[in-house]
Length: 293
Image (cartoon, rainbow, N blue to C red; front, side):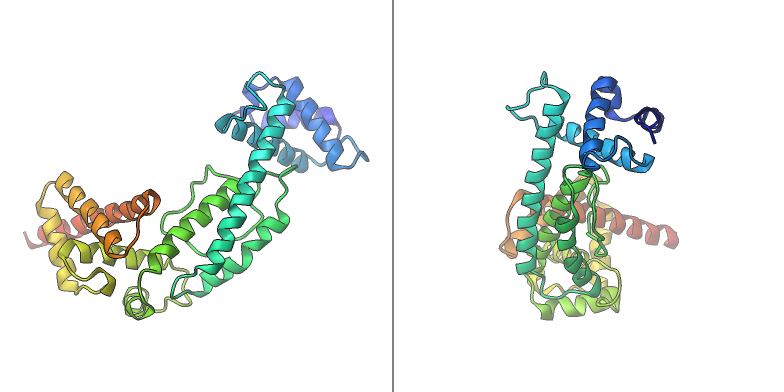
């Protein structure tokens, strides 16, 4: 494929990308340089899909630099300098992610399942395969274990890995506040076969901890009867939504305090879980009331 054909194909393929805010001639000059480096000078052309991937990597690094400006490459700098600054930011993100992985490897939750173990086993492959120079936007790794609150699809490359591990660590940190003896019966009632299913381990504990805090029960015991949960849902359905939200947020603060945990990210993460739970509890309670009428 010739360079001109590659250029035209990319113009048609990415009409809504940041290509529109960069001078096309400078962008394609950089693309040509990167293709030459990719082929180690053996060729000025590559398959269309490879060219597209290299272009997407360039655009991703330029966008990253725009979101995280650096003093050594101001906005007036050449596109090559800004791309290089973006690559440096990508490398920093990858280093931070690697440190988070090491922390995650040393701080697993009291109980795990196959999906968690498989994912932890697969994550190191990301750092072995990640190519910040040519494919910075790619995520060369599989994530079998589902998070309670998934990473935004807007994040790519090392940014995605960094945020995935940050969320995984938040979940593990919360779970480590409980004993395996408290978690096991909860998982068995929530999932039946938690060890083999593709399920999240944080969600049952987080919801039960908030419910216990809301009703004044022992948070670390993670135990509340079905009748108690139903009464709590009815209570939350009987008050204004703003008041219900406030009660849930107070329960979040109480649950974290009882677990000896702190930090804005942990608070926000559990807070989002609590608000999702509130929606379900109010809806279920209102459905019951409607059925009785």
